Amino acid sequence: MSGERSLSPLEVGDADAMAQAPYRYQDALAAAGATEAEYPTIARGQQLPGDILIASGYLEDSVRNDIQFKMLESKVQLMESISSVESLAFRFRGSTLTSADDANYDMIRQAYQAIGQGDFLK
Image 1 (tube, rainbow, N blue to C red):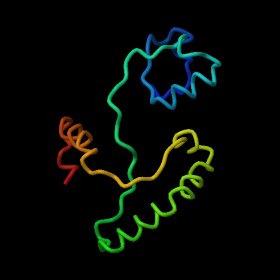
Image 2 (image 1 turned 180 degrees about the vertical axis):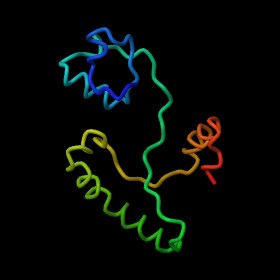
Image 3 (image 1 turned 90 degrees about the vertical axis):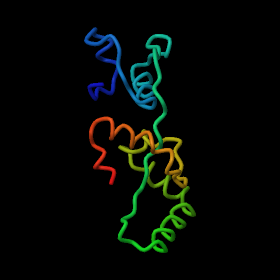
C-alpha cells in the first residue's frame, strides 16, 4: 500500500501482494492491459462508507437542511460537474449523492478509538 497506482511492484518482483481500492485495481489492470486472472484478488476488506460532505455546526438547522435539499435536488448535475474534473473522474465514477446514515460511520469511530484518537470524535 505504497501509493503506487500501477502493477509495477508486482511485475518487477518488488512486492508479492498489494492493497488497493477496487477502482484503483481496475484502473491498474486496464493501464497494464492485464486481466484479473493474471493479478487475482486474494482478499477483500469490509466496504467503507462513502465520503461525506459536512456542514459547520455553527449553521442553523434550517440552513443546513436547505443546503442538503438543494444538493440532493441537483445531485445529477453536481456529480456531472465533479466527474468533469479529470483528477476526480476516476475516483467518483458511478457515484451518486445520497443522504448519509450516521450509523454507517460507527466503524470509522471505532477505528479512531482503537488507535487512541477517541477525543477526535467529540
